[in-house]
Each structure stands twice: as structure tokens, then as C-alpha cells.
Figure 1 (cartoon, each protein chain N blue to C red):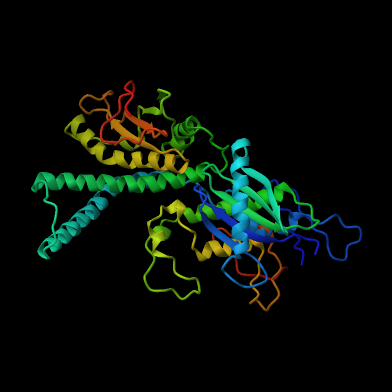
Figure 2 (figure 1 turned 135 degrees about the vertical axis):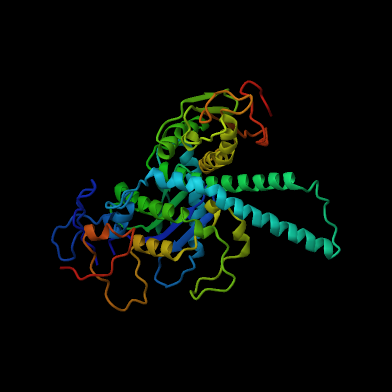
Length: 195
Length: 269
């Protein structure tokens, strides 16, 4: 396959704790592969070095390549880091594309962090979704250090990664024109057939 | 499988084309296939049809109503705490003796709780606002850069003006002066400046919290103390002339308590 794919997206807090790590592999599992945690950890060391030197840029470029993934990084002014891991292929990887992906992640992260309802204590009864309830030690963390557990954030990350759940038997609907897609941050548009 | 995206006209990305499967001499595959329309939409700073700015008036109205509601909440918290202490005492557990009871102590406790609540609301709002505002700005490397960002972009976003004066003693203490501080500008009572200053004291913790939250999110641990004019011994005759003392916690010195206004010349550690 000549084109490259996003294998993993990660959000790391200012204190280098993982806030969100999601892998997009063949298996339909919400638990990220442990391998990607390891790779993210290795990439963080490089982020520390690079961010110290190139203090005037946020996009950090290619951090490291390990096995079959290449890791790119981005650090915001509040020292929140985003990592994107893509499969290594012979595709030309343009900085512009990655910066677009990072900005999309940044917007989703900002929307999530500004929602004060995420810092409320979680309900005691387990919810219907198959996500396990968060451990009680998380409740005492500050909002910016709390792991991200939000179905909306998950959906947005899935859309950024262009990931289709293997449960979908129907073929993926064709992409909407950009004018319609621009309404996405407010309300996800229902799939419409392409004219 | 490759997605073809029509070139969006709302921002300056060049039209992205991807090679089709049956094309002849196609261009080499590139990472542009990674960009979905959703990614493009999310990468815009804000949805094109939605104005990101909120009218300043709802914020002022909210600020005016906050003390009443939070006072209510503070009273409930104090009542609950006292009930808990009473229960513990009745159950025979040792309980710390309360210092004094009576109307004055109750009022003080209530004011302290209210102040804590106003400040924590300010802290989370300030942190998130700093996060949003610093999005498209160049990264802030030094503490001085962070302070300058506060004095300009942050102040403008919140109160539509810049800080009137910033001074530092280069040892971690910064003084921000605003001669017409917007939240306090419209406070007036028929009883003169002293009572207006007392009312201002209720609204200041929120702004203090905003600054403290923004500083903390941008990586600067500091204590912030505010004083407004019109109080005994403070500079400035009008209530709206406010001074914020920011003391940055350096590696050696722990951040001091914020109960008294720091003097600029004194090196308090």
C-alpha cells in the first residue's frame, strides 16, 4: 500500500502524563496497543530536547521512527504535546498536512478542556458504554491533568484519523464537500449522498 | 479508497489532489491522503459561520450575579461542615475547639468561602482562556513573555484595554497597574468611596483567579494579590484604580501567602 495511514494519536499533558492515546489498527479495540505507549514515551524524550532548542516553533516535525511508524510532534504554548504516528511508506509526507492534523487535534482538545462538566465527579453507577469507569484517583487531578474520557473527543479523533470501525458493513459514504464539512465542529452532519 | 477533496476556498491551503488508482503517470503518493474533510474543518481556528467572540455584556452581568449565588453555596458548605463536626462530637470523636462563634466570625468565614469560590471559578476560566488565546500566538519562553502576554492579549480579550503599567524588580515580583479596571469601573454607592471599595473587595478575587489560572496554565507558578484604590493606605483615589502584585515562585523560595499586598521594593522571601 503506497499511501500512509495514521496509526496512533496521542495527547500528552504539560507534566508528561498521557491524557489520551488511541491506536487505529485492524482490531476494533478501544485499548491502545501497549507498543504505542512505549513509542510515545520514547518520543517524549526527543520532544524535551527539541523544544528546548527550537523555542520559537510549535511544530516539532519528525521526532523518531521506530519499527514501522514515524512519530511527529507538536507542542503548544501551554506545553501540551500532540503526537501523531503514521506508517512509514514511500509517500511524501508534507509538513503542511501534519500541521493541519495537529491543529485539528488542538481544536478538539481546546473544546474538551473548556467543558467544565468533565471535571465533575463521575457517576457511581457504570454507564452503558463499554468504556471502563475511571479509577477514583483521577478525580483529584486538575482539569488540565485529567485523562480525556469523552465520547465526543473519541469520535473527533476517529474522524481525524479517518478510521472506520470494522463493524460498519456498509461502504463508507463519500466525503462531503468542504462547505458542509465546515459545520462539523458544531453538529456532525448526517451522511448525504454526493450529488 | 483515496479521498478527493475539492479545494476549500475559506482558507489558504492549496487544492489537494490525490492520485487515482487508474491514473497513468500519477504524482507520487503523499501524506495529503491523511487529511479528511473533518480534519480540515477542525483545523480551522473557529467554525467559519460562528463568531468566536462573545459580547462583553453577558460576562459583566454574570460577574455581577456571581457573588449572590456563590454566597448561597458558601453558606450551605459551612452549614454542612458544621453539621459534620457536630455529628463527630456527638459520636464521641475528638473535635478541634472552634475559635470563636458569633455573628462576626460567621460573616468572616462566609466571606472567606465566597472569596475562595470566586477565585477558583476565575482560575479555571483564566486557564482555559489562556489556552485558547495562546493558540495562534508564538510560544512564550520566559516569565517576562508570559507577563507581557497577560498584559496585552489577555487583558484586551477580557477587558478591552491593555494594562496601564507593568513594573518588575527582576527578582520575581511584577506589578500590573490598571487605572480603570473594567469590573470595578461601574461600582458606585450613595455612601462614598469606602463602601464602594468594600464592594470591590468582593469582585476582585475573581480577577485575581483569572490571572492566577492563566499564569499556572502557561507554566508560571505565582501568587497574585490585588488591591484597588479607595482603601485606606492604597494609592489611587478611584475605586477602579487597581494594582496586581504577582510574585513568581522561584526555585528557592516557596510562594508566600497572599494575605497582604507585597511592597515592590522589599525582597520578601
